[in-house]
Length: 251
Image 1: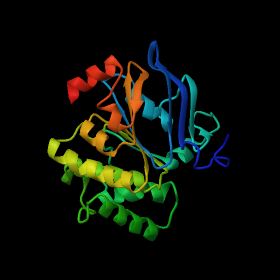
Image 2: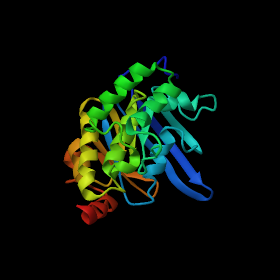
Image 3: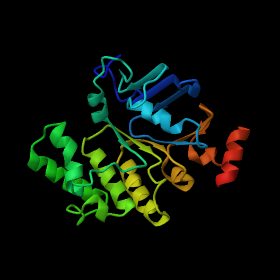
């Protein structure tokens, strides 16, 4: 199936029996999940349970050993797929902000649409300014990354990802390296995005946040999905002892 045949009543991201190993270490052992357009999915679990690897496979940053990942009906790990085309569709924000230090916040947000999408400069700048406002950074357009707090840099990174007009956004522990007081402003920016209808897949250890914004929560442990469900039941009625133990340690 290719993206021409994809329709919005089908999952926008569909993962089937995904296996991924690094050498002899099997990190993902048959993971399957579906994400519908506009859904917000949170993936939680202990360190080393394969969460980050899973979402890095979705935009082909990690090659897979077997299984299937479809984004809008397109097989992500088809050798003939243009990874650049995929990454226009699937935006990603990492723990590290990866901003260019010698470019202003606004220039960082404008770079990809100018260079990759070849859009006109005026149009790109206009959109970049709107995105800066959207993540509450008006007035910081001309600041360099070194002049911004971690939380501000992370919000520039979110705006930069949105500048490509992705269909899906992946967030990999984006608050893990931040001070507690800047975590909130980044989570607010993500919440706004989720409420606007963007399809979001988040790896997070912010349980209160996951409970508040997720449509569905997946708990992974040792490379498999142990349990999943909507937040209303997931946090209060977890069945599997591994989930119960994990939640008892962090809630």
